[in-house]
Image 1 (cartoon, rainbow over the protein chains, first blue to last red):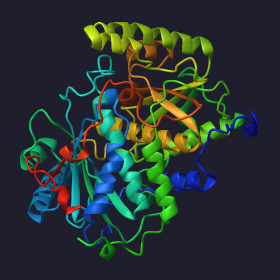
Image 2 (image 1 turned 45 degrees about the horizontal axis):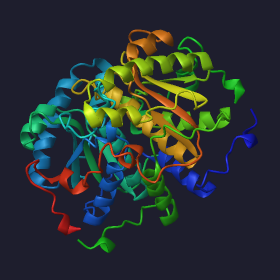
Image 3 (image 1 turned 180 degrees about the vertical axis):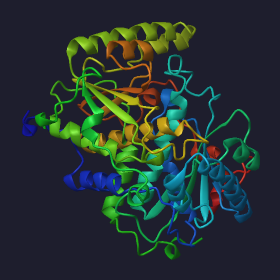
Image 4 (image 1 turned 30 degrees about the vertical axis):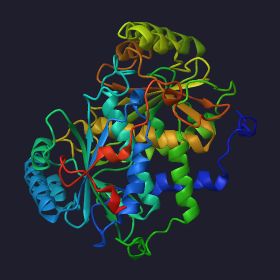
Length: 231
Length: 231
């Protein structure tokens, strides 16, 4: 259908603002290298956390919790936890794939002067369970929305974010004195960076190729492809 | 610490671009009312899906799958699935809280001319399991990051998004012929809207109050508050 007919007068974002959003989305990267030693100022860091706090949440539950980890000894301990999980993961691969795996740089825990541990308080009564009777997992999904808000806002501040999932969540919880009933959702590296890669590191390093979107879009039913020639 | 010292020359986003991002984050809403009847053009809809497809994903797995649901009969069936789950949820509340629950408008499935069902292909071998040995749930989290990308991009296009979690995922999967091994992560309403509320509907309608961020931020350990006077 003709695009000119459907843009409503109600859209109050300018073309420039829209472009900025698409640019941040396109140029956001998972950063594992090139962190700079200067710490993020408290004002800037809090601005990122406010952006996270403005995420959608099921039932307006706002179940996210954050630990800013700056202390170097703690980050060294987290790095040790990563190294054990990474060694376990490496042995799952064989031959050339294993050699490639061992060459990848998968975290910046020590280079980034601050880490951010992101948690979900599943047991909070905030929101009065609205939206969670049928899909209780949406409390965790709300926390992930908050992470993506922070990630995109960080990109516009020149701050890189790297998500480290190669670790034992229970070991991190013990280290940071996180209660048993609070779920570890993500452990992030955060910091100013020398620059942002043109393409994802795992694409550049030959670990995985970019998939075509068109194969992933369906129309009305899962077994019906979305006709991309309609575009 | 002084903010002036830490902003690196490498930040290539302008102040206006940064403001646009924070504005979209601040003004994004979960929309349940006020959808306009004109459909989203295919070019615009695809632009939103490309934004989703540019999300971070564990191991560059890109596990998201999308079904654009425009057919009215299907949306009516989904609405019926919502109504059953909503009736089940309503009886969990008592007295004034139940009366308030029953007054809430929690979905725009029929008003929004298009719905979007968002799935996760957990079993894809893309990414060669990198990052998923220790935290397999990160494949689903990648899909949620894609949803948040789409949600923010939509806001800058004047397009509202509403996430409906009050439904039986299995019933939706049967209706849309989604394979058993593919996980339903979200069912969204999508459409141009009359406007965006100043505050979340659930806050305006008195369901839940906004939480203070400061109570949710900790320093180094979960039992240590983040000193907000450092800001």
